[in-house]
View 1 (tube, rainbow, N blue to C red):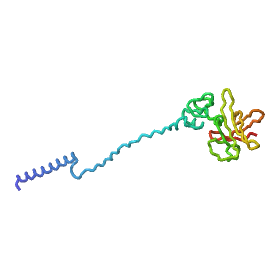
View 2: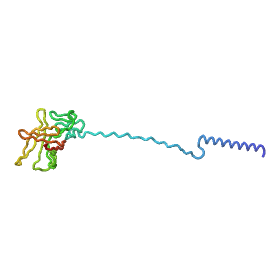
View 3: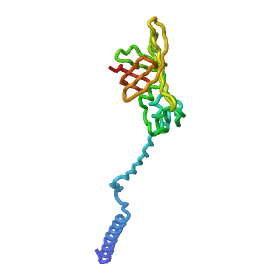
Length: 213
């Protein structure tokens, strides 16, 4: 082979090596040659969205003060007081009153809850149990009834009751009443002896008495 051909072959080999180096450099820079690259980075996690806590429900006044029919349910309503046998926002004149309108008497005491009309529930044999007169207890030859009225600044608290005469006649009697501690005393006018009871339970629907010894 001539020197001229050897030189040309050398140049051809050198050019091929140079081209390969240039291509490798280009592939490295653009990371685009060969098989597709796999993304091994961790997936992006969307932040959790926390729903705001629901606000607690606010209990509404169940119909207002005037819809309550007894002392306990009346005082359970905000701003209501039990006065003169009715539920209201203010105390009635010349009558008892318990609740926020009368801070010295905040609760339904026995001398308040017994006010009104009662009838003897004869189905309860232990002691004397009275319930409200709007409760149907069925027929009876004689059923004792008691009605308590509140006192005023000028008069004592009074009561009425029915009585059974020896000839089976029905009559009425009245007098004054008082409570000291858990003792209920019914006083009749004249020489008739008083009746004294121990109050075992008293609320707006049930009055349970036991005759004092």
